[in-house]
Image (cartoon, rainbow, N blue to C red; front, side, top):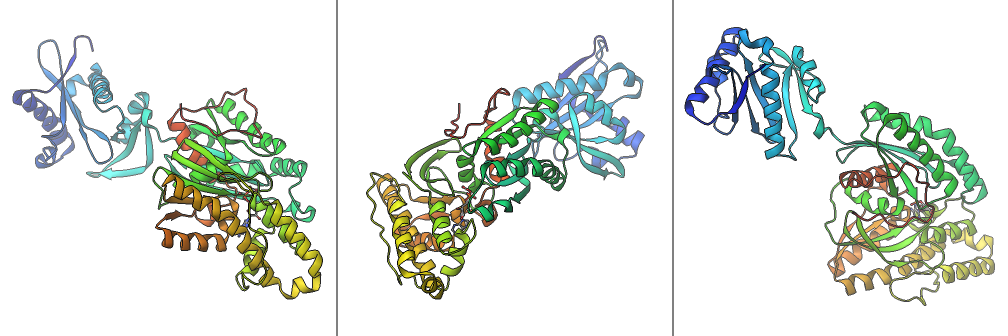
Length: 482
Ligand code: KG4
């Protein structure tokens, strides 16, 4: 190895030396036809040549930019020089040149099966199954620095235990276990939620890993809902994530649940572009958020009392539906007349803020006055009317926000964005007012770890990791980019 130098090929004579070595190795030893050895990529590739102090060429390789990244190929070392570490020198030089010149490209190569160990020692790892190139079995190997970011995400902020796996921004699994235990109590019982999370988390995580065809050992990071949410419920996911982080030596990412609801728009297409306004409508929150980038979000309107999901659930309860009853209002509203009964929509709020207490009281009085038999006989009309009212209340500040900010891209997120009435109303506004409206897929509307995973993906890229000492924050503020 002493004295062997690797140079970047500059002259045609040096290039001829490279071809000479390749002919000797590939054409003579491996019966690769001569014409296959020289191809159209020779011109764009960077060629390297290893020489001894006497100036004799011993080995060569080349690298070139492809659609996927930078491919290293045509490693060839003359037989008498095989044990001198020439291949190692070539690879080290090639890696350092590529990292200098194309630092953000993925570096990959196709290694013959016997050479797998050599490349592994040099930071490559095999992806996928063996494939055949010129009848010779190969592995596709990727340089580890560009190892795909494989993140396990856990959601346990309320009454859904969920785990998801995302690889380089692509969601591979999203397992959700809904806790039914709360239905008979008419709302989420925090202590019961924590216990149910404890019972479910191990199997939910295992299923998410299996569905993504990955293992804990392959994880680059573990993400978890850090807040807002119920402290006891958050603690279960948090402690589990902390254990994985410590055990596997990987960083932990603490995701804001409400930001994640918004970033769910980036799981699938079409994706909004920045800036956009997001109406977050869930069981715990009602917010208008100005989204300037993945991690630059500002709340410009919020509720002063109940969230819209709570308003749906409480009105549903008055009609005799089990918790969470929002979906039943939606279901019966389909057949009803939204103008059959009217409830107050007037708001005494500043700016883009919300209040649902007035309509809640009005609806309670309405139910008490009309009596159960009337409500059951007119169920569809009652549901359609209260749904129409809640949507009216939601729309006014949103319309004001669009008009005053001039931002006409509007997205909705959170459990209530599953509501058909709200979706239809947004489409109508979009057509009349020239908005571009984004509504997430149903499966990403209610609480799920897929949205935690996509948020974690962007945080991972920005190196936003959590201190292992950190505790969950039930009133967590939005995470900002550094
Ligand atoms: O975001 P999410 O899953 O979690 C919490 O913030 O708790 O939202 C749950 C809320 C519940 O209030 C539920 O009744 C409501 O979303 N929801 C609906 C519909 N589907 C779920 N509300 C109205 N119409 C629906 N189709």
